[in-house]
Image (cartoon, rainbow, N blue to C red; front, side):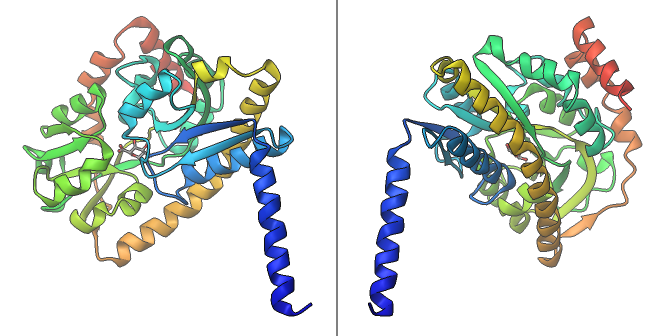
Length: 327
Ligand code: GTR
C-alpha cells in the first residue's frame, strides 16, 4: 500500500470508530457556558464529559455549547430549570435573586483571598450552599475558579472610591452587585455579559468589572484600557444540573455524574491558574494601564450597608460569620 492509501485507511478507520463511539451515547446531555472554547470552565466540563463517557462504557456523553450559543446566563438558568438545558456552568451572581444562600458567597470582600474561598467552598459550607440549589430545580455539582474581579473602564485610572462617582459600571444581573456599586457612588448598570463589549464601545456604559481571563477573552480590554486591581469580588463559579434531567437518570448514573463533576474540579483549577497568567500577560502587553496600588480598606468599609441588606437574616448572618471564621 502506498503511504497515501495507508493514511486514508487509517483516517477512515478512526472516523468509523469515532462515529461508532458517538452512536453508542444513549444519553447526550447539553451543557451551557458563556465563555469561548478553550476557557478553563468550558474545558473542565469537556473533560468531565470524557470521564463520564469512559466510566459509563460510552453510554453517557456531554455536549458543551460554549460562547453563549444557548443564550445569556440568566436565560440559560431558566432553561436549565425546565430541563431544556441539562448542565449549566455559570457564576453564582445570576443565581443571587433566586437562591438566597448564593448571595453570601457573592458579597464583596467576603473571602480574604482565593485560597480562603477554596477552603470554604471545599468544606461543609460549600456543601450546604450546593444543597440550597435543589429546592429551586437544580442539582449543585461543583465549584470552579473565577479568580477575583476588579474594575475596568474606558475613561481614566480609578485610584480611589471618589473616582467611581457617577460612572456607569456594568454589573452581573444581581441586586447584590447593584447595591455594591451604589454604595461606591457609581451608577450600576446590570447587563448580560454578551452586551458589555458593545455597550462600552458605544459609550452606553463607562466600564465593568471582571477577572483577568474574562477581561481578556471577551476583548473588553480593547475598549476599556484602565484596569484597577481592587479585587472586590471573589465569586465562585458553579456547575449545576437541571433537576428535571437529573431525575431521569438511574441512581447509578447520578453517582457517575456527581463523581465526574467532582473530578473536574482540580482540572479546572489547574487550567485556571495557567490561564490567569496568560491573560494577564496578554492584556499588559496590549498596553492596558494597570493600577495595582489601590488601598482596599475604604472599599471594604463602604460595604457595610450591602451586608446589612443582603445578609441581614439570622441564617445568612450566621453563614457570613462562619465564612469569616474559616481559617
Ligand atoms: C465571568 C464568569 C461568567 C459571567 C461573567 C459576567 O467571570 O465566568 O460566568 O458571570 O463573568 O460578568 O457576566
